[in-house]
Structure formats: structure tokens, C-alpha cells
Length: 299
Image (tube, rainbow, N blue to C red; front, side, top):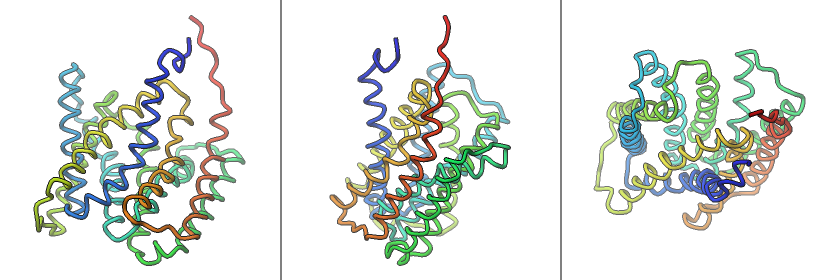
């Protein structure tokens, strides 16, 4: 019996976590940086989440990572979390709206296909069309007043997307720890890197984060890092990859709606058009994956 019939509620909950929770983390970051220095907030978030997940995996009896696995996890953690999530956090601190920052997630599949060429991957014509359309969308996004008002934020958003994509592709060829232990190690190392960056850049706590600041931190740790990641790992094992990665074109829409509703953000015509173009490009890229059918397993 298909997994979707046996566990419909579990699947629905997993997709909800990817679509809504991951989409809402951009607004949570926007609220958090009002009381937390950006690098410090990201560093504390991943250090706590990594420690909790690492302890849980050890309690479950997961084997301790080898030295090579720690090194590999450190490199991927640097690219995905320190540069990827850290870059988004800095971009929002520089004034980029949370909804616009979320578009960095939508362009990740474009960069993923391009970086895949380094490892001999071949793209279909439909995927190349998606890449070209996505590049047009990036151009439109940079014409909007939001990124023009913050050139540094624009550069950070693109860097974050590129780093996440390169790390995602490279991770397939590195000896990483098995299962969620890989994420735990990546978060621990990335958290330490971000905290070191916070110290070196001279960040200081000028006031207590207060109740709202700690609530946002708890939300990012528990829901944004642990629950959503576990849901993503579950979906990767039980649905097609294109379905599991469909968050890439859902998160921006969720982030925009939440930012407009709760943070008073305004998305201009250029940003709205760019979102439509980028999401269309990612759908084009995903179509070949949706069409691929796995052969039925014989018992």
C-alpha cells in the first residue's frame, strides 16, 4: 500500500512543516534581528538545535562520526548554514524584506543545476529553459526598490542561494555522517562559525532579547531547524524528490503573505513580477523530475 494512503496525516503534517514552517522562518528572522545581532542569533540558533539533535541521535544509538565525516560536515555546514542561512539573516538585517529574502530559496534549484555541471550532470532543454527564465526573474528582482535600496542585501541574498546550492550538490560526494546525525554535526559546526563571526565583527548585545526575542529563538530552533528538517528527511524517503523540494516555490509566497500581514512589508510590482517568473522557472525545472516514474519494487 502506498505510503500516502497508510500515513496521510503524517504526510500532510510533513508538507505543512516544509511549506508553512520553513516559509514562516523568514518573518521570524525579521522579528528576531530587532533584538538579536544577526550573526549571534544565527549562531545561537544552530548551536542549540545542533546540540539537541546530536544528543538525541546519540541517545538513539547512532554511531559517532569519524574525523573525515566531521570535516565533511563542517564544509557543508559552512556553505549551507553559515553562508546560506547566515547570509539571509544578514540580508534581512540590511533591510531586505523577509518575502524578498525568501526568493533566495526559489532560485536555489537554478544554481543547483548549474553547479551540477561541474560533476558531469546534463540538463534537459526544459531545465535550461527554466534556468534562463530564472535568470530573468533575478534581473527583475534586482530592479525592484527593495533590493536597490540595499545593494549589500541583494548581494547577500544571491550569495546565500549560491552557497546553499553548491553545498547541496557537493554534499552528495562527501563522506557525511548517516541520517540526521549529518545535520546535527553541520549545525554544531556552523553555529560555532557564526558565533566566531559575531565576535570578530564586534557584535554586542545592547539589550536583553526579552520575551519576544527568546520566543523567536525557540521557534527557530524547535520548529525551523529540528521539526522542519526532520519532515524534509521523511519526505525525501517517502515521496519523489521533486515533491520533497517543492518548498522552493511555496516558501516565498508564504513568506510574502506573512511579511505583508504581520510586519507591514510592501512588495512592489517588480518584486511581484519577479516572484511569478522565478516560481514559473522552478516549476519548469521540476517538471522532468515529476515525469520520472520509479519502477515498481518487487517483493
